[in-house]
Each structure stands twice: as structure tokens, then as C-alpha cells.
Image (tube, rainbow, N blue to C red; front, side):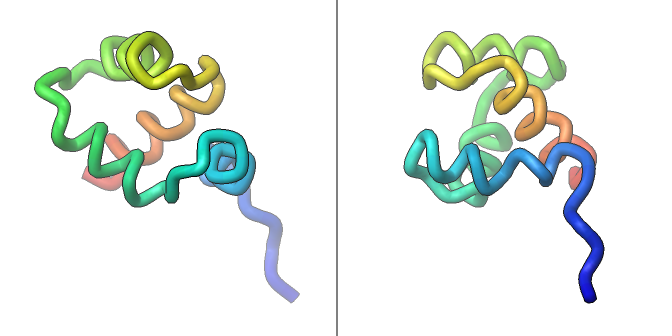
Length: 67
């Protein structure tokens, strides 16, 4: 039996369903952005890509933690 996904990754299924893009594509966009600060990236995803705050925050947190 697998443990439930926790943390930012727990948002990923709903992000893919709501916005129609795979998580890998969102991560690529974040990494390609000239912005580097967490909240700058969150604001950019909200403003330019229409994400909600929680979804944008989860994507940025997970991506920055990987890098």
C-alpha cells in the first residue's frame, strides 16, 4: 500500500486537471523565467498564467526545492 502524497505535490493532480498542462511543463516555465524569488514567481504565475495562489505556491515551492 502506498502512502498518500503530501506537501506541494498533493496539489499536482488538481493543477493538471484545472489548467490542462502537465506538471513538467509548469516546472519548465518556472525554470525558464528570469524571476528567481519565490513570491515573484508565484505572482507571475497568478498574473500571467491565471493560477490560483495555492496552486502557484505549490508549483514554485516544489520546483525550487528540486533545484
